Amino acid sequence: MVKLNSHLKKASDLKKGEYGVFFASAGHAALYDYPTAKGLQAIAADVWNRGGIVGTVCHGPAILPGVIDAKTGKSIVDGRTVTGFTIEGELIFNILDKLRKDGVVPVVEAVTAAGGFYSTSMSAFDDYSITSGRLVTGTNPQSGHSTAERIVRLFDNGMRP
Image 1 (cartoon, rainbow, N blue to C red):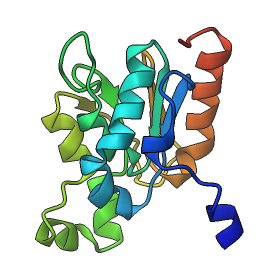
Image 2: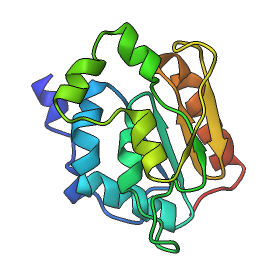
Image 3: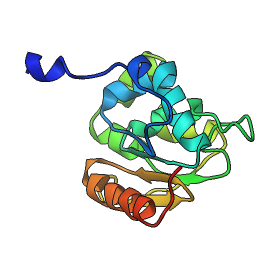
C-alpha cells in the first residue's frame, strides 16, 4: 500500500489543462475536507471553465460550492439541479447530530445554499444520478456506476475542453 500511495499526486502537483473530467468521490470525510480543499476546487474550476465535465457522487458534492464558474463568479451549482447523499441517509447512519456538532454542513444544505436545486430519489439508497449540463452527480455509492456512465457518455459525445 505504501508503494501505491507513493505515486499519488497532490492537487498542487497537477497541471491545469491536462484533464477534461474532474470527479470527486465520497465518504463522510469529504464533508470535512472538500469545503476547504482550495487546490482540488481550483482543479475542478479549471476543468469546468475550459468546457470540461465535473462529476461527484455521494458526499462528493460538498466540493461544489467552492468550484467557481469564471463567467458568473458563482458556484457551478448555482441554478443547476444536483443530487448527493441525503439527510435521510445521514439519519439512518445516525451521524447527522455528529455532523451538526462538528459544524459540518450536509450535502443538501451546502448545494442549496450555493444556489443549486437538490433532487433525490424515493429512497436514500436507490441508484440515482442526474446530468445538469456538464455537471453530473449521484446520490450514494449505489449511484457510482450510473454517474460514471453519464460522465463517459458526455465525454464520448464531445463534451470536453
